[in-house]
Image 1 (cartoon, rainbow, N blue to C red):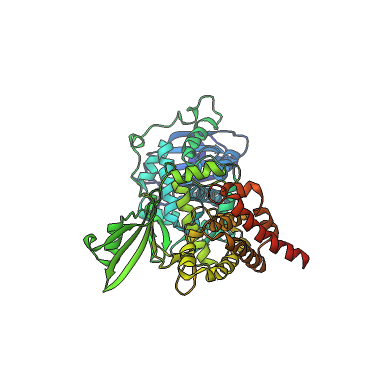
Image 2: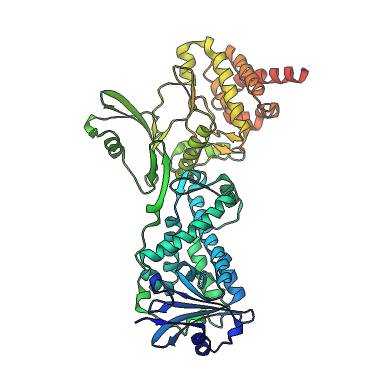
Length: 535
């Protein structure tokens, strides 16, 4: 049974002077009801400042029992902008509504709240996936379902309305949410593409610089705000006049937000939840059964890296698969402890994987050669890339002869200068991270320790001294000199080269490269610095 409602019916029932009402709105989970009330409808009344509280009660209008939220204007504004009440009132704006009075005011509050909801969802994504979230594609559905899932979990009184939302109503809210996301594009926080929206580095920096609790604590924070920040005489006072609907006892079945989240790969957009094994990926990509696939572990005992070979249409195909190990991977624990106080290595698998995904894409955009990403299995920490046929720097020099050393040093000096000019550091900058192809192109690999605005001198120290370990001692000075010369000539800062020779960095390489070898490399660096000073 539906009944039409008007302001004339509201004021007597609530015993409120009409001039005190800032806005009144009827929220219908089934939008086709329009101004007609039903058992699923909710009435929101915002009163002028001075009311000072929020109260939720049931009132009968004609033959319909309606849930009514009455709230002070200042409190409502704060709940819309920052969920100061945990969204106890503001969440009603996620349900299509008909303004009875104060339409312009309600539109402003809706924009504030949808912006808060969007930023909250994006912030959680960034806290979880760090820099790599810039290559995620977020849809309005992801943000809406993420919020509905959260609010229905922490605030039972929202559940009946959320359960009653129909497809038409969802589309109305999504349309409004899309307009807010477009304003975030204008603000520089999102970039728009054909499928949806991606966070920008500007937004990543904003979130990273905020003092924010880890995202898993936010639901608890909202619960606290709902029941404490309302400043009632008791924590449940503001809902004591509301009848509890049995439907509030069960959480609504809401589509999984992650089904509307995508990531970009060289093979196209990939639904985020997709988690293929090596066998499944090869079969999906080529139709080849696993018994015809050769999987070879290519790293050492501490490296979970694999080369996968199979024939497709008579042609040999290769892919590279990396399994990220967590802190129990001794390599990173040892490196972190040894470099403590100088260089902070990332040791958590999720952080390293996120880093690598970001920098593979970022460096490619900047014109560097990186191996294309084919598939990402976030759950199992598996990264699939196109295999790069070539030799690492040490193999290249050994196989091509020491007469190629100068060419290699010159090329690497230029690459490192270009990296540093873009404020990117490799973090773990060793000679095995550079793959030389037969056409002399150089590919950058193993990018999990890369960072923005990191320690440039450490990059230089590690690359020069690590490489020096593998060179005949009488070639070390020449390598360091040629590399440093190319670094400066391509825009690298001489002060970073100078700092790279300081003991706080060189001591970290002493277990690998003894001081008498280090002294030859340092001599080569100092030689070019002196030449540049002399003009």
